[in-house]
Image (cartoon, rainbow, N blue to C red; front, side, top):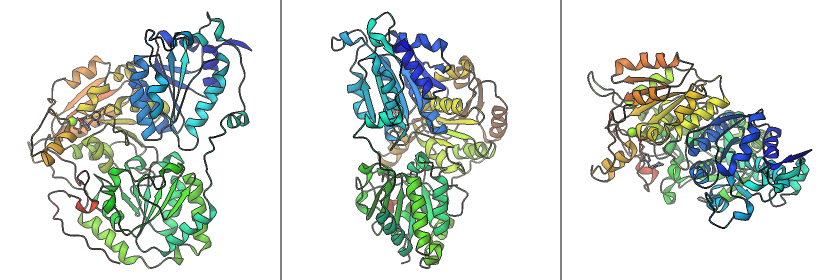
Length: 587
Ligand SMILES: Cc1ncc(C[n+]2csc(CCOP(=O)(O)OP(=O)(O)O)c2C)c(N)n1
Ligand SMILES: [Mg+2]
């Protein structure tokens, strides 16, 4: 079938099964926007290209399917660099298509030309400047294959205008669709290992059966590998506690008796300390991020390490594993379960009752806590989150921005299902929440989607609520408006002698209710604890447009526990109301 490159690009996306894409047109990508009119793909017109990238990420987080964004060249391509980097850091499969100036103009500083593949090389899993129309179907198939297999990640295709412009003879091509075998043969260097090494798996099973203080350190890879069920089987077979990192919240149910919750800089005391005192860490799809390890030299000093990851570059990057296993988390965990069973299963393990009672002792002594406000005092952000959590369906998808509100959301929500927490972990991108929530809602239209955002974050990408209102995507946004860049304020209070430098934002400039209304949303304001529940109920009852609630919260509230940056996890600072004594560990 004869067609032009622009038609082929859209047909290739349709053939890949793309149902929705997020984008904004411009000169260089114009010819590809024309066939969208006749396409089955829903296109969502964003207000800023960063929004398109985060929407694609939110869609991928929530559905497991690759998110797609399409933007023009130059400033549009640079606007989408942040989401590419975000997706790269958090291993989110997205495919981004950028327009480029015509092949003959490349390198001439043409209008809206930039070196997109150069700029994005270090923030994409793969990128390609496609030089010929007949390469388009192959390039698209490769892009989806690379984005979704192995360690998932962002792939960018840069498309010069002449190869898609029907007025240019260079755009003429014959349609074809490469087979899986052709795609794999065309990528000889790309063969992700999915099956773990049998001998290593046996060794891991032996270590598990010998260990007295084991902890499963579950990371975002569990979700990417759709390994939540396998993880549960392993934990229940062995009775080993599980910590779920910020990127893995929901991968193991918070209400499960073996769940210890989030470790790391703002993790709870028990999750942090049990890792610290463990004699074996079973790291599954986790990457020893500095926010988890604290000072690496003193991290879990007595622990042997089993490290399972599909990306061989992760093994030994931060901490040398005793048993490294390259492979897909789900497949490896399933094999590990078999290997443990072969060796006698849970009953073949040593008595761990002393360790278990130590863990539950920590849980009792150091639960997450905050001081409730007295009548007339400022609203506590944690109080808002508890009410929100208890007033929404259990499978609500929660999307957060970056800052204190993000940490409180992770701490105070109860994540009992995978793919219910969408947030920016590795890059920590302020402005992520609103567009990512839109993407999540587009992918999961029957689910309730709440964004919990900071006032600072909200101001970065709030305009995407115009997109949500005009496209009838009824997300809900809770702004925890503490009038500050709160997380930075917290560091200045604790580590810069309360010298507050450029962190004050004002509670009422902008007026968030009026702003929400101007964008076609319902706007509500809550200033005291008594108003919280009715506002949440009202928001939950609105389903024909987005809702924004401006919760005026206490500016002074800090996130605890906290391991100061660069400090050892042994130096965890708990809530001031909890007396902290030195932690001894049973052997
Ligand atoms: C794009 C971007 N710029 C700066 C930062 C640094 N930063 C991290 S948290 C934070 C404050 C966030 O403020 P807000 O959204 O109000 O959330 P809060 O901490 O008050 O809950 C800042 C400035 C960042 N993470 N991302
Ligand atoms: Mg704030």
